[in-house]
Length: 296
Image 1 (spheres, rainbow, N blue to C red):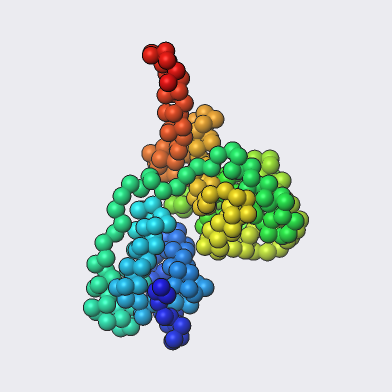
Image 2: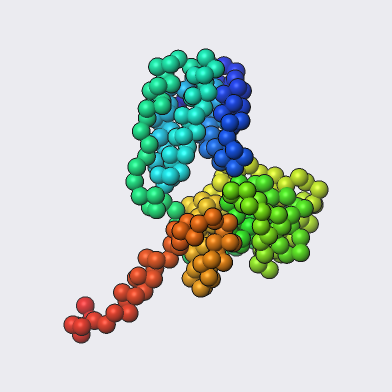
């Protein structure tokens, strides 16, 4: 099904502009990325190309179904929030009928266990991802290796990676990194990650405004394509952040130190990122002696 016929008229920029303008800077990046994803589901290149005031209940329900399929409830509901928000702006601007907006506004959110989506990659999957980059002698291979270096190497969010500037990268560190909530930190790059960023710098130069020249949604697409080339199951950019946290916890990094590394306000948030609990439980169960002695 083609969910929307949005190419029959010229997009009005006002709903997108006014919706994003009323958000904070961090939320603005997140919700703009969410709307870019929705746009691709509609078959158009980005949120700017969508005729949002043509959206109706069936279109929004299509978005809900795709979001529930692809994301954890928290993220799926963030996508729905963006859709409701831009519908609200369409209504306020007199572009969308009241009954159409009310139908979209009343669509229920996605319910379920927020922890069921997302995963941490194992060491073999990480090796295959980087090996795929190394075997790719194009600029895309070098770029993806550098991108993996910051997504996994220092646990950046994709919006943070998209905003990363060359002036921040020197002396083996990423300086003045603006984390979620507005806090600025300096992150030490692992030596192997610094090397891959330096190779990318030698290829493209340091005169470009940002390190990767990519939008957050494009980073998602690039990693998805790289996973396919590496022959591993799909992993999102945030899965690499989960892997960063899980690997640190498996290696015994102090929880307070990890909280700082990840830029979390609360340590409870950091704990959620430990996806090694099931692995440890299985290992503990395997160590339990068999009282029957029959080996079955």
